[in-house]
Length: 548
Image 1 (cartoon, rainbow, N blue to C red):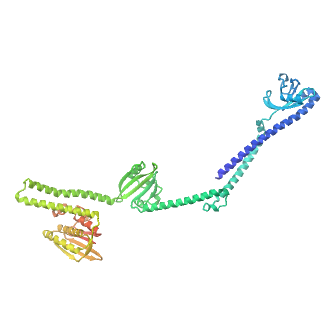
Image 2 (cartoon, rainbow, N blue to C red; image 1 turned 180 degrees about the vertical axis):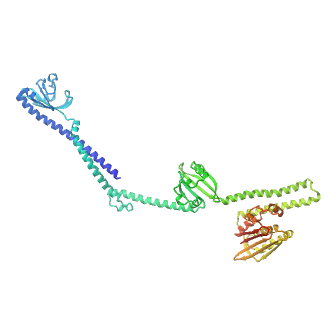
């Protein structure tokens, strides 16, 4: 601002100076013209006296480079001219100054001289002998005047310019000083120019408005940060140059960065080629999705363009932890494949037996055997379907009406139901414990105990023993099923509760079962908020403990 005021003052000073010089030159020009006429008249008086006294011989002694003398007869014939040949000059009777002198004794005029080619002042006087004496001088031109005045003008301009620079600098600083000393926080308390009061009021209002807007933006920014930081999903915002402008806590954890990551190019930290391609596609306006595993966690990334009025302003990256979802998808696919296989096997057996019976390819004595096989496979099929239905209901986690039941009583019912199987397998089964009441779904609790005991019996050796214990401990109900059967290797223990998972497939076929029993146990225990623990050693047996 100081420079602008300085330049304005200098410019104004120069305009004033040039205008002043122009006006002064005009006055000087007029002054010099008047001075020339006055001097011309004075010189004419002197010459006229001498011509009257000495006659035309006086012209021989007249020497002047400024004045021109002309003697004209009463009839207009030029008798003498100091600057031209008289006999070659035209008649001057029609000249204004000559005509006036002949009539009034004196004459004057100013005109362009054809002879001299310049504007000239003329003065004439009538002599006693009837002739007219004329004197002339060339008018001083503007150019000539400027040439004469140039040194003085140059000195004046230099002095004026120096003074203008000094004064302009000082004035500019003095003008700006009150503005530089303004208290922007208290604009109305400033002692400054009255003319600035309206502007200061306006600035104060604008400042208040801007401060309010800043507060609103800060509040919205804080709210946005709180919302995004509360998200489980990672969120990263990039500008159109790929620089990070915002990142929430989940994304910081995912990419292993902190707040210093803001303002940096995203690809300098995350060098994933797939991510780089996805961001590039998003910048071009194409939706991108990709899956990547990082530190043992599977993530899904959704990358989209941030658009404003048709222009790309940046990119938003959303990340989702889909580890459980991916695991569930894999389990679902595996479950579907296993269900298909498990359903197909008994159906094929039933169809095969039925076709043999239909075509009379079975000996009469073997007919009952094939019918029993059909019944067995059909029963297995029904059991499988029932187990699948139970699992589906447990997966849905639907709210069923819970009731208070005695788990010890249920256990006794299960043992009674499995007595025949235990006898067939030559396995002893016994129950120990006390009445343990629990609020839950009786059918699911029955399935838990039944499947654990059924498995313990089926995988026990002849002469083996299955112990079922129930007790109340510290407000919890503990159910323990222990056998001294074949046991489970440590590498299989974490998977025995998966659907259709079999440790020994060949042995599993012999023992029967659907392959879903322990999976139902796991889901039913989870439904009732319980925990399950397995402890097993190969060749020594297995102990499964459930805590409700």
